[in-house]
Length: 537
Ligand code: DQQ
Image (cartoon, rainbow, N blue to C red; front, side):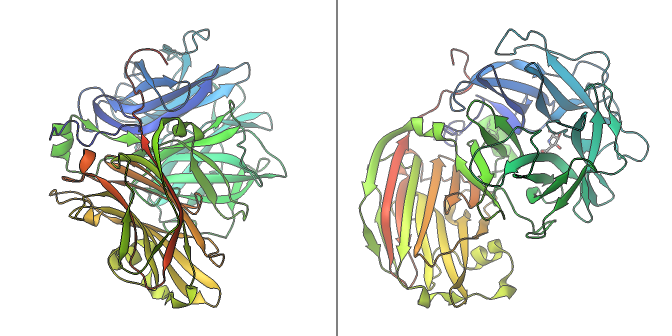
């Protein structure tokens, strides 16, 4: 097999070669979507970081433009790191990004389109009054980065910059009347002890009800706020839902979830440095995240590429107000090709059924399971700890009461390799259950040196109606799963040696005592997207 090609994705955002990391400055301008991203133009490892730039009309097919921002001035000669776009009144986009100088001091700069009549915004100018924000006394100059999309309230633009003081994670707040002169607020927007450095903060409003998104400056009675941070120490992210007081410029998280390492996750898998933007085309808030490779560095060099962006997701507040919901953007469905349906199928303990007739290495699968007997669910033991420890102890082959049941993706016919995505339901007390969604990379491949975690998250869902749904987007070396309509998401990178191309298969399975019914399973072959080649969009 061709190492450069075999694990490349077919419809995830990926340039033809070299290293990528964080999505930067996503926005829509004159109806065209823009995605910038951290890119090494010289190799498949992190370094020489610039802002690469791609445009799209549908968030699915992309065209590469020339790099937008690259080191050239004293305020960014050491690297052009992450940042965000803000659309100023009069439809004028401006980018805030972190530049490093020759001594690796981190500072915040701005860049503006050189020609606003070009909807592709091919050229960007970095004015000479940069940097806008320099790390003053008391700020950690090597942990001061990733400005958010700015919001406007009380006559000021406001942005948040990730930082730390010792191990306290900090979201520094800056204000400006004119977007040029920025003053640090006395108090950060928020900070939490023992969380380490906060990278790529994201701060945005969501509606209390409904799926529509909001412009980042929206405020009001029917609005809640989300603060998400990426944790440098643990390399995962967490978020809280809370109340933003625009007068005091304080964010107070609700106490319904942990404000720290145990907090809610946008994704329980390989997902980092994520960023949202408001899509004014379709009135929705869209989330992008970076999924890095889980194979050894040498492989990345041999592959000639490293890193993908996850499928953009529409995000909204769950009607219970306690978590965000996610769903792949509807546009991705344009890539659905050949479709197969599995009728109602019951699976007794130890049974599985193959979903035939699709390209299982590159597919979209939606399934609804039902279970009749929750009484046989095992008792939940709170001392088990986090969902991933449960998954690590109880893999897809460890029999249970209700579950494990789910799908086996990227599987060889003989189950030499497979990536199972499955549920287990436990009983807490009468009519109260704990549901775990697990995406277990351990059986995914026999290749040496891979990082193969048992990713998992709890699913806060009422199962007394006897049903659970699952959707997975499978794309050669990535499986992105959405449990219970988008309550719990897990992205996993896997590198099968045999379960590739036509040797990859898809199954539904049950290894629990309770009989499971596949109420409905629909799977589609997924076509390739046009990605990052020059040409039309
Ligand atoms: N990646 C960027 C930083 C950011 C980190 C550098 C997060 O700006 O903090 O490439 O992955």
